[in-house]
Length: 419
Image 1 (cartoon, rainbow, N blue to C red):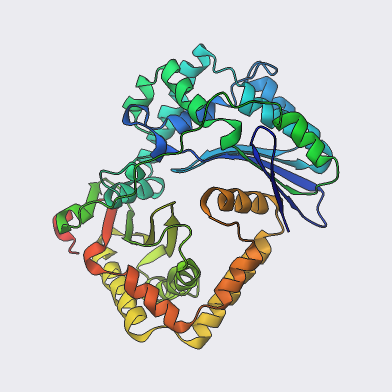
Image 2: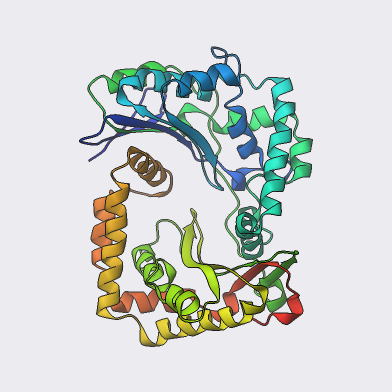
């Protein structure tokens, strides 16, 4: 079980103890990401994440900061999404004090040195270029831009090269100050936790005071135009392999349909025994990588299919995908498929729970997105209750041909692809 409470400064703490582990993961999550940004600061949440490793009042530069973490043999990193930004350190529980000291120092005392801020624009620009030059990494950005055209959810998390070059220090710091407040902070500790943990949490995270009330507003999710020409985008690029991603609007994070969607994806394209894998890779040899999945946000979501394949095979692969969608809707799934899917998802969750990082990430996201936190066990109970009829119902709700969006990167002419 977990324990959730608030410090006097309204910082939210979640403790998720585990048995039989010597590690502890400390994760700080903020409900802020690229969809919260004004247009002129697009990518600034990601930029701020980078700057958190550039030195604090106590640890003057990157080397001083990272050397202290590295000497622990710890795993540490940060990540930015469209609706959240997170920072974590996973280390031996015997280093809990040091981990919390470093993490709180980064969050509350990073200096944002002017020279460092200008210097870091270079690596971020190169990161953007790296993604843009790599179709396998960039296809997600292209697809979401088509799906959420005109909505902040469609923007690249890192912004554009022009945005990054144009950041002004005062604007970035004002944006950070607006969102990085204790009352807007979630701290999750998972793994080996003892009676001293709460004392350390209070010591390192309970002293910072709110300087202003956080702003949590963002523009409502909106899908792009549903006209055929606007639902289809091809980035022509000289590559040996084309990347295909197609998808459909689906359900938001807290939707009651999501357990059924998860099982449907497992059957449809979520494993090496899934329908798409067997039909596209094994039976026809059209692709090496083929899978389906889903993504969710506060007020939106989507189901997708991704494939890496030779350009000449795109049309055939799309025909097979559509055929499998039709079978799913018209014939449903067998009892054996549903049982196997439940076992697959349950087994994957069981394995993941051996890692303290999984628990930290699970509870941080639940605290951010869910009206009421559910445990992995409660989620599994919902999975077990899903019926064959539920699978068909969500398939019919999601797989609507006139709502399908398609993105392709490769040596392809748009006129040669028919949707």
